[in-house]
Image (cartoon, rainbow, N blue to C red; front, top):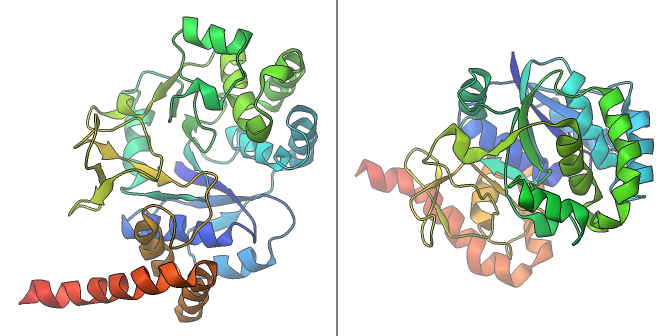
Length: 311
């Protein structure tokens, strides 16, 4: 069975609303398995009662992954290593998505192509740029020579059993010899790429699922939502190609961020009336001027569109 995994807590709940809303909007009915980032989950657990397909999953190996993260990446980013537990989780084929992502189409479509073997790779990954993965050195050169994608750790598609806890622990020991080449603020990302390389896994970027897809998902780019709900690049070398999802990695949610309206539309749809009010108030508090200049006009336009189309 297919499923979606993410990593979240009370702090990232605002982002998670966008992800959950976007999944609902595209008709995705897959289980959404939420791995707790830490023990700050009271608000998250309360919110999850509104989502029929969401469940919290705490693998017993999480403390071991926490310790590995501390050893490799240090305090701060070490809980990100918890996402690796999905490789021995309850689902056969899965898609991992960071909470600060919204999708433009049903991820089940991607997983079915991958699961049928049409992608001919071990993992589907995204965003190929080694400068955000390794410092200049042996690993960066090795990836360049092998023409291996160096990818973002906020998304991957894979299957159960590709990696075991023993594999991850062994790779952790081997990674200590290369730790000076890891980028400290992206420690889990450096290790994720090292782990795939060390284990000999073959990753391919998203166009392996179809030539209509772009291999970038960075949210601050010029995209439009098509009539089918897909995100389509408007200009540049990838104009006309589909962005499967948008990722605001490292950014803060608010009316000043690029494509804020695409996130807000999804987040509002995943909230009850009180949640909508809290979300809009939070947007206002982050940047009152930007909020007043953008949000009311946009929401009014969205509300009027069905009536105009009916004329």
